Image (cartoon, rainbow, N blue to C red; front, side, top):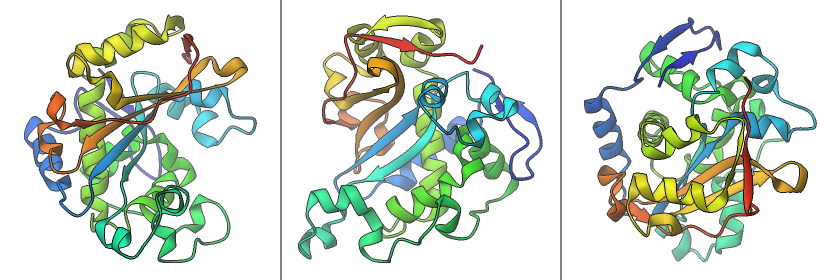
Amino acid sequence: MVLMVGLLLGSPLVSAQQLLSDREQQQALDDLERKHFDSYTLALTWHPGFCATRRQPPRECRDPVLMAAADDGFVIHGLWPSRPDRLIDEGLDIDTWHREGCFVEHRRPRGGFCEMGPPIEFDTELENALNASMPGRASCLDRYEYAKHGACTGVNEEDFFEGAIALAEIVNASALGDFMLAHRGEEVSRNALITAFEDAFGDGTGSALSLQCGGPSDRFLTEIRIGIDAERVDDFPSASSLVDQPHGRCPRYIEIRSFR
């Protein structure tokens, strides 16, 4: 799959068949392994569907370069650790964690995503890879995601985002990614999408997938969420690395939108 890196935050326009080498992918997965929380939720946006549901589209849904770069696979929304053990010990309930995340430990700044902290910067290679994988950086999504989901979990910024890139690339290179590209602009059944996921990850793994939809009658696929065991991330995408997710909210038939 060819991913285009947009002229975003000063990065050059380049293309790459694979943003991280196989060795870099495996190292990134190893670096995500943790014992002090149970799991991650990998949230991957189907960008054309997401943009079609926005009443006030953000920059990444208006900029032709960013849109073209995000039409060839899933892009990163976030990587969400479950409650850290120490916060469970302090009595933090699951609903508050889902709503506030790390903001339970530091007050949520007022304003939009760009007020969540200073710009997150990496070396050129990782910077370009993240720009290609997360068009929402144009709206400072990366600052918000790390402030809410990473800052209090013991996962540093580099491991957090490089791990998310590796996971997203593996999904896009799988049978599920092939299915999505083959059916862009088409309507598919929810069960066909779940079957494509099981073709990629193994029989019976559909319970680790949550489908999110929006738009008219919730028909547009906007996102998938995959549950991953925090102690088995290095085995992803094997079935043993997955954990169950809550049921999604998509109808029987789903439209896979395209910018084309």
